[in-house]
Image (cartoon, rainbow, N blue to C red; front, side, top):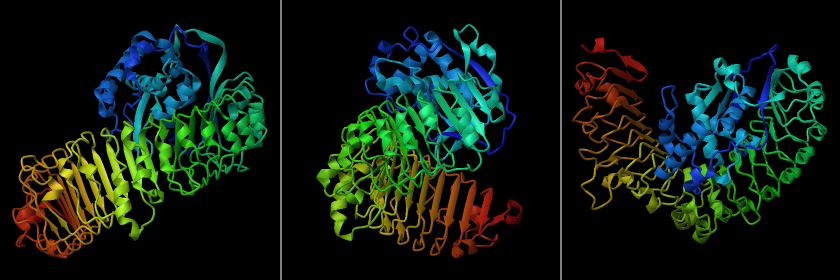
Length: 626
């Protein structure tokens, strides 16, 4: 997805006319695949799964090491980067040239840009499974060259970048073979009159996508790339049927954020189309003719919350590599046969179907999936045997997994426990989220130390679970969020370490812990000296039956402590608050607040060293404490 940073008119924007380097097949300048043969199936994302935002001082090596799931992936990334930087300038130069379609007002994420490059055919390695990793290394080399600059982090798309306007200088292209015609343009409505009919790549910014714009676009029959950016409501909520009949050479079509509710069936006539982006539109369905786009590699539907269904014969899109969609809107089911799309690398969401739907077994052969995968409506899995067919443990490039139930079945508690046990992911997983699980206990694999790379776990509304698993045994866990688990009454030693394991410190890497809306939690016990050595932030929220906190004196790294709506808490721990704490926030905890507000109060001495103390929204300044 490519985003605009500002909904602002750029009327009068100068048309940028650029000459493209030779578009002949890069037979003499493509990355040397023999140097990358060790990749096998490693196409792991270079940095998109990182929890850390890129900064200008970060090197490419840092970016590669942020998130790669294995030493092999790091090695492959570095080999690819060296190959392109040192020996193969033309593909990188072609990527630079393509970036001229993005003015400095546009924001984009790494994956979208790489997918656009791939759609252009810039990289032609013999082993197609490494195209994205080659593109990723080129992307980050352009970041290091300061052509792309990080602008902000977005919760939906991750790190966003923009083109550095100062770097778009003609000297970037000196010495490169160029075509005699002007092929790339970034234009607005005013500049439409200056666009030659031979244009091949156009990024058009318009205030209103109307019939006049459509009429002009029809006069560019050789256009290969069309990216429309419209900031106002359109005169009509669809794309003209005959537009695509005039643009039959399109390889890339970006209509994201356009005010449309449907695509014409003529989109199926775009036989060369590799990239289709209709994300963040109000489209309700795609025409069935989309299944004729046999060369389509990328289909972006993220943010299409009105989307009801995908084409029935989506399975015909055998070259599809990226299917990016949301499953939280109106989408009812996945099309049958999705499992035949074995080239898929991105499948952000999967809805488990019922009798006539898409069974979870469709995931079995999708071994190239990577990045984030959300599997929803798990209540439709009929048995543990069916769950096993998903074979999640063989998907070694999945870094984030969300497992969601949408309804509760009180008569299926044991079955759901067995089903979740059979949905064990690969040990290379980095993030795990479980929503609305109805079983009474979480799976045994969730606390297996073999999950050595997992950094974040979120448990949400697993209401029947009475015990928290031994998450303290996970060696790399940094973030733990537990919400609305009302079956938990006691947090004890089992949470910190498995029975019989006494010599290991629990939660050795945990930095942030949040317990929110555990309405029946009464006791937290079992913490030992040396546990939580890296904990920086700890939050207790909506635990109205919790009568005492565990000893916090062991938490020598703790900086931030929040206690909110824990009305039965009588006091802060007897051994006080660690000297490292810089901020305490207490709200809706009348007993604690009463004992901390004034210098002669019982717990005053426990907080007087803390630089920032907030009691019921009121900051207790250091001066008022003496």
